[in-house]
Structures are given as C-alpha cells and as structure tokens.
View (cartoon, rainbow, N blue to C red):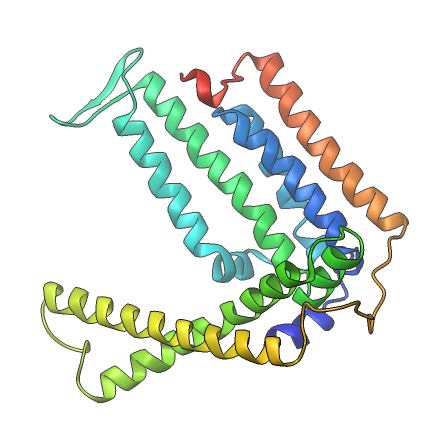
Length: 266
C-alpha cells in the first residue's frame, strides 16, 4: 500500500507513460548491453540514463536505497572479472594467485559499467511504475495469459512485504537474544536462520495468496477491466528514446573499436 501511494503521488513525466512502453524501452537498452562487454557502449548508455533521473522523480539517494544490491553486485562482478580474466597486455598487479593486466582491467571496467547500465533502467522502471498499471498493460496490450500476469503482479506486491517481513523477523530474533551478539560465525549462522525463516514465511504467504486468487476466480473466463490501458504520444517518445540510446551505444562502441561480443570472448 505504501508503494502504491508513493507511485500514485509521483507526477514525474515518466510516471505518466504507459508501463508497457517503458518496459519495451528498457528491454531494447538491455538487449544491446547484453551483447557486448565493453566500456564505451555501457558508458554512453549510462550517461543518458543519468539524465532520466529527474524525469522519473528520482534522486541519487533514492537510487541507492532502491538499487544498492544491484550496484554492489555490479561492483563485485567488475572487480572479480579484472583479477580472474585471462591476462593480456602489461601486468598492473601481481598478488600471487591474483593478477591484473591492462586487458583484464579493461574487461572488468566494461563489466562494471555494463552492470550499472543494466541495473539503472530496471530501478527507474520500478520506481515510476505502479505494479497494477503494469499488469493491466501486460494483459490488455501485450495479451499475456491472465494467470501469468496475476502471478507477476502478486510477486511484485510481495517484494515490499518481504523486506518488511525480514525486519520483523530480525527484531523478533533480537528480542530473544538471537543474532545480536557473538562472533562472526555465530552471526552468519543467525543470518542463515533468519533467511530460512523468511523463506518459510514467503512460501506460506504465496500459498495463501494462490488459494485466495483461485477461489475468487482469477485467471478463469473472460475478464473486464476497471482501468483501460492506453497509449499516448508520450509513449512514442519513450520507445523512441530507448531505440536512440541503444543505437548510440552500439554505434559508439563499433566506431571506437571496443565492441566485444560476449560469446566471442575478449
């Protein structure tokens, strides 16, 4: 409910666009970035994505709050690639079992920037899109099966609840003196126990939700819609923007000679 109220109160330009057009734009950008591991295409896409922040009503602090797991994962992936990729060029770092060369560093930077460039559109999409509106668009415009759409909607709604559930389980365990003290091994063990508790809660909640939706007839028969999903001129600009960013990233990498197809290696 808190997420829905926040999105409905978001009057940013991208918040008024149809969710399906935003999804198509993100898919186009992601498809180009997934084809190559190079820093030029990722940098071009990343620059354009940063300019979209005000259009989505986002700030850098909100980006960190909502996308920090993806950002941290991209940073770890970039560092791991730079020290584990095959060496090429001059050796920059030699730490025994780990070495970093010019080629592996360039590959790691490309992986890092590509991770950022792929994560940011997803954060932008989810920050300025109401899950119900996205489900309406997928069902009415994309003609996807009702069961798939409703399952996706339920999963998106449960993401916020799982975060609150994690905090609740953590406070309950700390009230019993579990996980609040001890050495590193004990804290890791407590975290794993808390994760198992969250998994159990998620399975129970999903089971109850599935039974409830089935009992109310979701996914069966012809359905009507409380809100019609429509396209406007703004949606044409959104899709055109996705095509433009993807094309500029591709052309820039090919022109600079850094285009590196994933399946062809470095």
